[in-house]
Picture 1 (cartoon, one colour):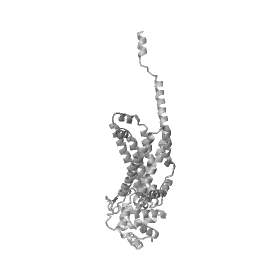
Picture 2 (cartoon, one colour; picture 1 turned 135 degrees about the vertical axis):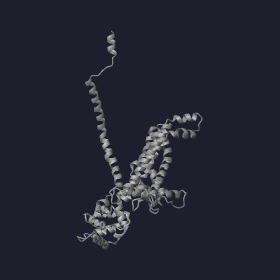
Picture 3 (cartoon, one colour; picture 1 turned 90 degrees about the horizontal axis):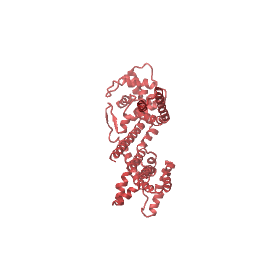
Picture 4 (cartoon, one colour; picture 1 turned 60 degrees about the vertical axis):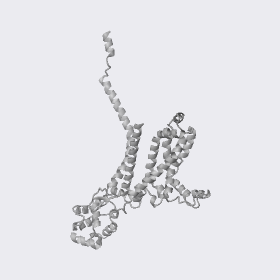
Amino acid sequence: MTSTTTASTAPTVLPADLAGQLKRAERRKRLLSISLTLPLLGFLVVIFLVPIAALLMRAVENPEVADTLSRTGTALSQWDRKSIPPDAAYAAVIADLSGITEQADAGALARRLNSEVSGARSLIMTTYRALPLAEGLSPAQVHQRMLEIDPRWDELPYWQAIAKNSNRWTPDYLLASIDLQRNAQGDIERVPEEAAAFGKILLRTFQISAVVTLVCLLLGYPLAYWLSTLTARQANLCMILVLVPFWTSILVRVAAWIVLLQSNGLVNRGLMGLGFIDEPLALLFNRLGVIIAMVHILLPFMILPLYSVMKSVPPSYLRAAVSLGSSPLAAFFKVYVPQTYPGIGAGGLLVFILSIGYYVTPALLGGADDQMLSYYIAQYTNVNVNWGMACALGAVLLFTTLALYGVYRKVGKAELSLG
């Protein structure tokens, strides 16, 4: 009897082969789970991470001078950048230009140097078209022949630009995007006050985005609260009206605002008909028109997070606060509003991040002083064909977005800990 009881209470020991089968089954499950996520991971890498990595790499890449004037860069490596370069550098320039087979490559080199020193484009292209020079010339003779082609070859700024950009990797684009530069000796300094532009443009971008976010919050909060008080059928019907802008092209909506806000548009005619104004207001091609159109486009991005949070707040909380002696207004701001902070934060972050990347609306409805950073990214991409500068400005927007998201996460965690 005693032995039977002892045997029945002893722990069960699995056979070795059964334990191995269980481990293999668990391993297969993990591998299956990983394999199911691999397509999504690959999609994210190809669509999201690879373009971002390419953007960041192009923001510091400087291939035009390094690829076409490699011999010249070597000849200038020991140059003091304060006196006329040695004759060997002149001979290296001719050798490098003679090795350029495509005129498009010479044009890219000329544009890159012209972005550093005005006039470098004509200097490079004039010399390139004058090739080939007579064979067997000594470096001193090559020097003299180049001065006959263009006497500017003895001016220091052009040589300093070549020497500064002879490396394939450069911080110049990123420095320029925050109004810094490297001087002829390679030291970092602020650009002259009259040339500083991107700091003001970035500040303007933040200002417009902040105003749009605030207006969207002031308009979207009461609307989302009203939607949360409706029945499910009524709320669904009204939500369709909120979502209508998602189904309309941005260009169509911007064109509609141009019609509405022009001097003879519906808004001015209505205000004049009601007697509020005596002459048309300037609502187009200025900051006001940009903000109105952006608020119209981005308002749903504020309403949706607010509505989803407000639907989860029990209405009995307000009634309980009122029944305990609080006034309805005090109960709303002290009991209800704090519970909607996650929706305010999510909606504000979403609208602000979308706003700082806006291009079409300010370009069509704003004036020269209303363009945001994205306008200049498009300008460098399509007009100036300066991909390095365009990618550097894009990197500034990327880092700004990541910083804002980091601040949002930190504030959100702080609120959760306090709660």
